[in-house]
Length: 367
Ligand code: B12
Ligand code: SF4
Ligand code: SF4
Image (cartoon, rainbow, N blue to C red):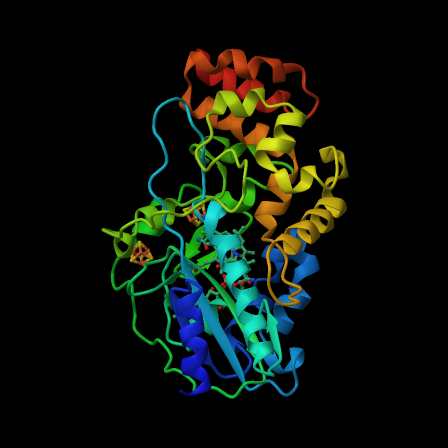
């Protein structure tokens, strides 16, 4: 058996759905896009840009690197419950991000056990295209032939010399423009290009949400799946069964808004961020502490190699701060507009940071 086949067999064993290999050439299109669109990323992700660039130039990470391995995990789960007034979270949040992180770390450990070096957290999107796994759709997400866009990706830079796969070159979208038409905030300003400052996913974790977007967030309180749910390439896909949340105690991807709005700091610490609970008390330590405290704790929990990959930022910032969830739940309650929710929003009319959102929400319930 070749080393590549051995690695592939291991991936099957640990439940990896997609596996491909590409070369260590720099991902040029990504590097030039990032330079051109730096203004979109500097404010929120400034501290990560240099690392993204390095990860997109594999030899800067590992001068004797020979291959880049890309893996994918299909994370479509059954549709959320519908009864009650519920908020929504992007589907990748509950399982996708953490599942793929767990698998990539196991794979890194496997490569190390074979005497190879392995650095996780390498560049993903262009790497997946070049490894023949997917093509980018006009919504700027990767589309795989079998699993559509419901796939989380990770990659490993390694000194193992593996046979390179043929890149994906097909045009997946043709004349379709559904995602561009249905994006609620016009964040998809050109095919394959999203403005993160307008994308609902970015807005929901920003410290402030400009009022012009309040009525466009739908019921989302974390993430957004609109451009994936309307995509014909995702039609008819069977949800993954038997997936257990990797976050015990997690309030769910479809939390009841009343429950979210009633949650106190203690409930938040046990139902929403159980990993932080045991590490730090109180969300005031957010920012720095959350990023490092929770991540450290979480990585300790997930068995695997010595990766420096961090938990996705949407998770860290939004899961770490009760106020962010509450703000988003207040706006979702206003979008539903049901007077039943008024009593849960009213307590925030005096809140120093949330009062303006609460006033808007209640106005919607009264009209
Ligand atoms: C920052 C970030 C965000 C930001 C900014 C998104 C962005 N695209 O830049 C925000 C918060 C908005 C976001 C949102 C989401 N994200 Co995000 N995000 C990232 C992150 C951490 C970095 C992205 C980045 O480097 N951007 C920089 C810009 C320059 O890159 P880019 O947009 O990809 O640019 C490419 C395109 O413009 C393309 N392109 C342009 N023109 C053309 C023309 C052609 C012909 C082609 C082929 C390509 C092409 O080429 C560029 C270079 O590759 C990655 C993980 C990672 N480390 O890579 C995840 C990642 C991209 N996110 C992911 C997901 C799932 C999401 C959400 C669906 C989450 C959700 N439901 O809540 C949304 C979807 C929004 C959307 N429509 O893309 C997945 C995508 C998986 C997939 N199937 O594609 C990733 C890869 C994480 C993962 N582990 O799997 N995200
Ligand atoms: S995730 Fe939502 S806001 Fe972002 S591009 Fe897709 S539809 Fe638009
Ligand atoms: S909705 Fe249409 S244009 Fe958008 S990604 Fe899917 S196929 Fe492509």
